[in-house]
Length: 420
Image (tube, rainbow, N blue to C red):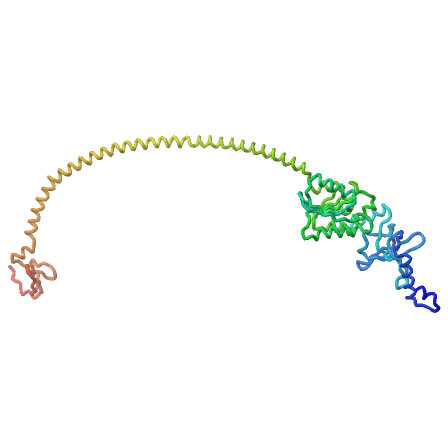
């Protein structure tokens, strides 16, 4: 390109712009510029345009919305990291890669703007916060492995409980790369096939600028969207990041996070011992109370059964007396039965013998009056229409009659009856 400038002849505008951009890229592959934001705007929900100015000049800046970690507004002093470039419209601008708020006052202002935005979306609502497991077994830890916060956390955790599966995501906790690494670590733990029971995100103390990664919009949103319950402990007790507000539980410090994530084994053992004593005492009290109630119930039952028991005894005595009377009566009945049997035998000998003689006499008389015997002596029985004829005048002449003999029967008709 430089050779082309030395050769005689003209070049096109586009060629010249390309030469300028190549020169800028070679000379300034990345610059950091501090200035005041003005004319800030977002187009189509993804393109950010603003001017960076000082007392004498104005620099046009462009960046993608997803690269903006904190909200900007006109009047803020920021440090912009980017690449200078001449656009196709021959307009000089800075393509920004990162924007940092300059000064603690400006940082607090940006944090407050983002806090109001996220609060309006409900990311800090207490109703959406989930309980932390009481006895977690697998803990996902997001912090810098070389930090004092990590060493203190592991030490406190081991002294309080121990025997836990700690999975560490070693990340940067400050600087330009920190937000992306924090978000990536959260995504890693939320995508595990066997998820951890709780995620803990910690960082030791520092200035507001040092802690700023935990108050960026991507990190706050990632904390709020975590599928696994999460504890965040950043800085000292007075420090409150937006990640703290979005977490299910805020820890004042990293060591406080260790105290919140697991109980103290000694306290649990003491509670168990205390509960055992209380349970045993309550059991003894309840047993004594139940014994008293049982004794009282037995006394009431005995009083209640005293009357029926006495009545049962009286009824039993009456029954035995009745049985004695029945026994005496049985003997009396047996004696009477023997006497009656004796009299019946005598009656049979005297009365029945007489009755048999009279019966024989009556049978002889009956035999004498038997019509069959009369017929044997030559008599006959005349019947008309099935009736015995006793008067000849009752039968008309020519009427059929039946004459019954001792042996056989004769059928005949009548003639004019002779009246005697």
